[in-house]
Image 1 (tube, helix red, strand yellow):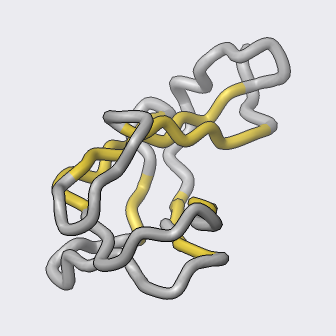
Image 2 (image 1 turned 30 degrees about the vertical axis):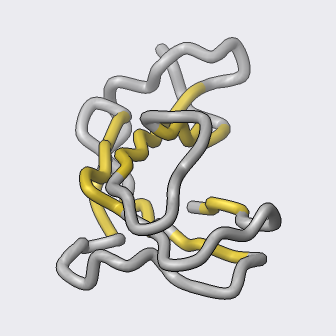
Amino acid sequence: EVEATKLVFTPSNQTVDVNQPFNLTVQALDGNNNLDLDNTKTVTLLLSNGPTTILNPLADVTKNLSAGTYTWMGLSISQADPSYTIEG
């Protein structure tokens, strides 16, 4: 049985442009990068180390994983900054 030991975030693009929507997927993986299909834990998306927040005010940043995965759709940022860090 697979039991997640980490969360891995993958953006829809490697570069995110200001005020342009992007998607972000989180997966619950074990030490061998196997997906924990039984994982339904709650994940809250945070943007840190930057001067702004994720813009979409209608986006619910706290979600439950389904089969170890969740994808936020249509997120955006209001200012460019190379120091952004996405956390969960």
